[in-house]
Length: 366
Image 1 (cartoon, rainbow, N blue to C red):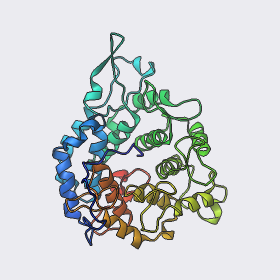
Image 2 (cartoon, rainbow, N blue to C red):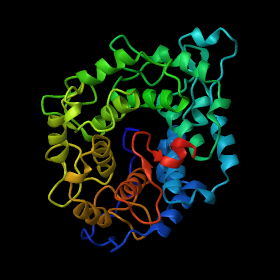
Image 3 (cartoon, one colour):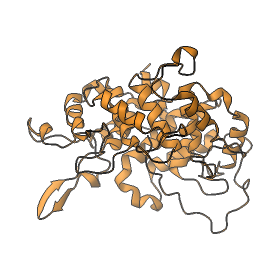
Image 4 (tube, rainbow, N blue to C red):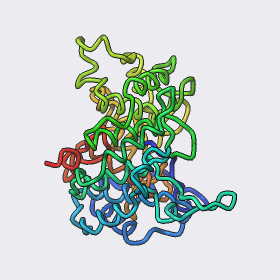
């Protein structure tokens, strides 16, 4: 899920040398401890992210699952907590009132808001709904128990005439992040009534730039996170096959050779991945770019040894990962650092379903 980056925890006033916090090996136990701490009590620096409580929980729960440590939490209690954020209509007629009945992002967003003296509930959100369903799959909850028809019928209210999606019924920006959330929701619920797939496909295709990458919106600059959202969405919707680089896939709906060329240029000289040209390497793009390469079958073309080395310079002695070498860890980059090591085949970790951003076991239920 390509959410806006969360602010990292407070950084040291004078950044130490790049290898100050680095460790020679992936420190699984410390990462488990870091995530457990975040599960029990978030530091005060995350107060302004309270509205994204379910997203933060997704980073913790999915991270623990990738670290083969999901048994550290009470799965039933987690499922009950997540389900408490689901939005429900007050009557059978309400799913047609323009609102979206997915999941709220936090307890705060469930409070009634006041507008011109009239109380109205804040709406549920596509990103929160993606995170909620992902967590429920991770803890083994049967999604067939959810009223998916109500959720998907109301989700179509968010799709725009050009095929894009707003994340919330009261109006917001439309871009590939929310296209991905909508596609992942339909895929997890095994029901595509929540979107017009053809319109969605056309919107995604229109986001491919002249250089091969994808921007968040048509005509915008190519970006590693947007490119993942585009490619993963097309894969989930069935418009990209298992091996898009093969000779038999020359009729792909996107320009795969140009796309692959743009992506491979994102590995910098220090081994890490950047999100855009002329930007510094950043831990999270080891997932956004690395997962895209995995979907396309192009991961064999990168220097995995150098990527591994870069990621270790961002590994904190306290557990977790920072955005750049030598900074304090934050939950967002910690999660995507962990996913990157799963993609690299780190011992003792669960395999990642790159299209959904959860473990293969959670994705398949096997």
